[in-house]
Image 1 (cartoon, rainbow, N blue to C red):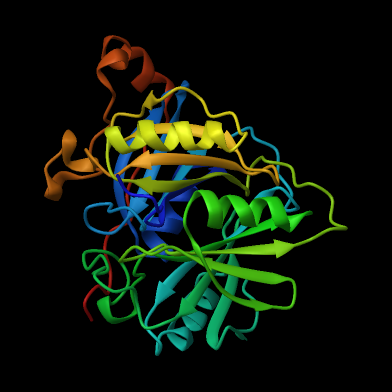
Image 2 (image 1 turned 30 degrees about the vertical axis):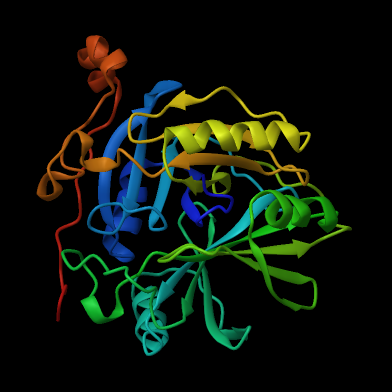
Length: 320
């Protein structure tokens, strides 16, 4: 059985207006809407998944859009920044594109010898584009609104703010098998041993910062990759042995999951790679229909009537 986590599986955040969320992530950022389903624990709201063509692990950013959700706040005990990978020559393109769409962005800066462009989605979620040449083995979605040479290649990584760094770092290294990959001031970088996207997580030591409030514009949880259901059971026992309290294994239709709080307070999920998003849709049809798990199909008419209609932005400029 594997003794190391292979990297980030997905990151899930909270939004407000579902159409605005689709317009931004599928339209402005050019990601593929891989799956439109519902929050299995609250089927009166959507659950959107964005990623590469197939929604492979390491490329998936997901949202629960609750229209009446209040604005959250960034702080300790949460993932404060989600970073995407782009080609080294693409930062100028993205500066212009974000400006054209009225997106609030900061001036690019360097971190660990990489150029970083930070910006904010319509709900205030902090995002970054990191010019690292694109992730190995991850082909960007070429059917969207961004020219393929500038398109997003999946996750570069994520930043997790913690008031006390030792216990969180020990979980990442001693339990999950990530390796130390450098330090810069209060930022400590760790890297998984897998291939592809989403290999990095930075612990930002924030001993004097108040805890963040998880609501609109904040990350709900970060999920990590495990190979399959057999590995999932082994990992659950390891988490128990480390003194933490994971949930039972839960069926999320496209993967099996456990959840637990890491020592700094952030919600972690371990999610299996299979079966993936082609379980109930062909690759060319991904994201085009509302998909429900078998246990919710009996309520489809009621669920569909409670959800607002969603229109995907038309592709413009892809491949040009």
